[in-house]
Amino acid sequence: MNIKSQKDFFSGLMFMGVGIAFAWGATTYKVGEGARMGPGYFPLMLGVLMAVLGMAITFKSLVVETVGGDKIGRWAWKPLVYVIAANLLFGVLLGGLPSIKLPAMGLIIGIYVLTFVASMAESGWKLKNTLILATVLAVGSYVAFVKVLKLQFAVWPAFITG
Image 1 (cartoon, rainbow, N blue to C red):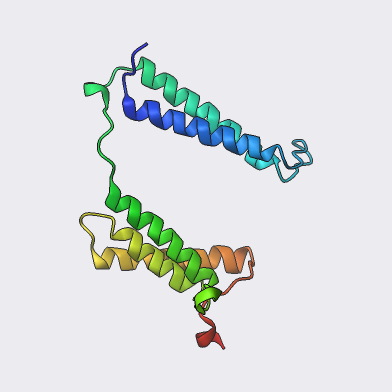
Image 2 (image 1 turned 180 degrees about the horizontal axis):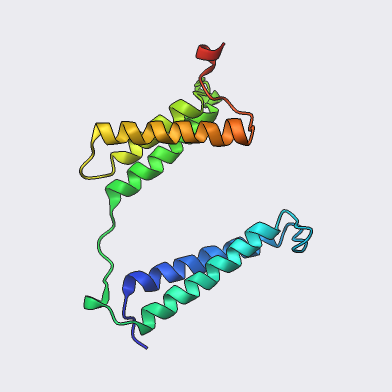
């Protein structure tokens, strides 16, 4: 059987691999049942769903004809580096880094830095769009996590809040 879409074939394999890994990892926790779910229930179901989705995508890549075989291009290194760096910076700013005496900067500053660094991966980066996006994400995250879910973590740096 010939691969008719390389992108779909390899993304389907990735979905299956991640799904199987999640499902396998979830079995180390108590799974429970639908009425009384344990801590492993959700990751197990998510893993199974991802694996099934991966199988469907892989099957589609072998059956449905695409123009030019939908070849995989070169690695996009710039976006990959910026997005990974943005997530690492967010984690460091949210929790701080005691080894270099960097205090926690809080949710709001973390989200602004995350958004600005990740946005620089885009080729037509615009400051105004990024500022609007960061503001919407910061306000939405504050409302969702702090006000609605009542999660306890720093919203602002300690030197601001005291």
